[in-house]
Length: 169
Length: 115
Ligand SMILES: Nc1ncnc2c1ncn2[C@@H]1O[C@H](COP(=O)(O)OP(=O)(O)O)[C@@H](O)[C@H]1O
Ligand SMILES: [Mg+2]
Image (cartoon, rainbow over all chains, first blue to last red; front, side, top):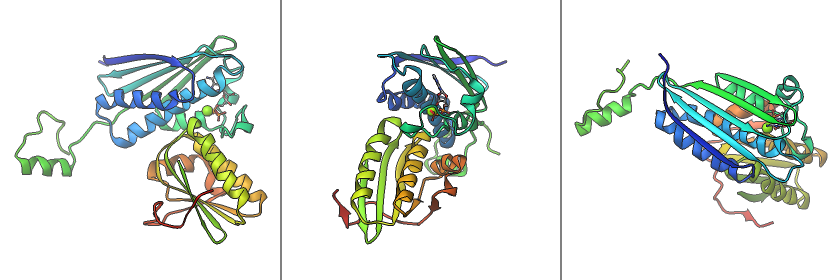
């Protein structure tokens, strides 16, 4: 059965310098689940897209607003990421998710944020209501970690046991 | 960060660090200033030193492609790390800018241009 084994919550203002902060925070938490480097890079990118959308779009025309990020790690190696804002909301989610659709072309937004989030996670759900904000949930199952040959060599040479790791192929 | 190198009619912009919405705007300003003030027909965006990029980087490439096209030149993306190449592939940007891979283009060689 799938069980939540660790979780974190953060709230921070929708300021552009917090895009790097959100990535770093998400990445350091998800690292606890021992992901492969490419899985971590993909999740970092997905988080960056979601947080950037809150910074760029959600609070447009408003003085300020907060971004809420929750991450959970499950026993089956699923990573669950929820990113939420209390901004303007999205009127037409289907249209917003179309690749290349953007409401801010003059700011050089590429309209590919949702496409990146979809391709770098296993599941993306969006809920939004005009005037009260947007909730985005992304899930990704991390691969089972195998001891690769390099690690085995190191352990053999140092004579160190690598403990109760998953079996080698 | 952007380091610019002018070599005949080619301007090479070596980008380094993270490219996101926060950092892209100053990169854009620096590159555009150099493009507008040099007689070039080719802009190379060197991604070899880029540590992170989201779709803001695609916006950055598309915008520079537009500018250099208006000026009658071509745009090229050089040496994106594998995972950044994946984001580029997703965007279809290679239809606008050729993506090239060299083994050891260095962003730190001489010929640096202060703009
Ligand atoms: N959190 C949000 N709040 C309000 N609008 C949003 C939000 N996220 C996305 N959008 C809308 O969806 C569109 C598409 O988003 P995205 O695919 O990330 O492209 P981009 O950010 O480059 O415009 C945005 O242009 C914006 O209109
Ligand atoms: Mg976006």
